[in-house]
Length: 155
Image (cartoon, rainbow, N blue to C red; front, side):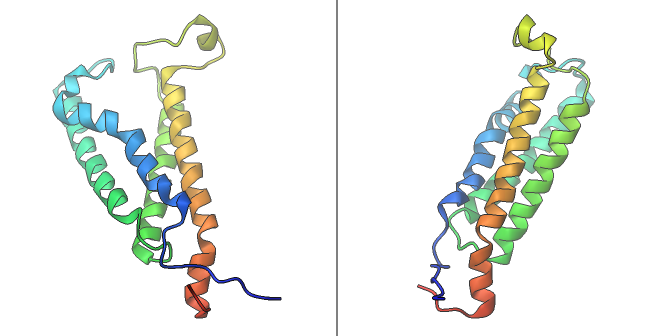
């Protein structure tokens, strides 16, 4: 059985998942940094405004990291560690949003609301999809890591 060679130096197309992380989180990050009081959250006070700004700072740092690694080779430990961190982050956010009480005073409509589909749940689902996409990236790029570990011929 012939072993196929993998170009371990090139980023896999599925690495776009790192840019999708930026796209998903950018709106809340921007508003939380610039005008956190404009976010449509219930019961905002000075403490929550500061917490939102601190959260936005963490998001901004994750954007920078995601942008810097998306084009790097898949086998690099730093890229894989960031993917693991982002996957864990999105999984935790999914859980938090799923169990959160209503805190966004907007509705998608009476029909979706009667089915339990709320803005918070849609936001939750987007994080769940992001977490799944990062897990898929992890498994799709395992051959890159295996090729480096085995010292196989690479392009």
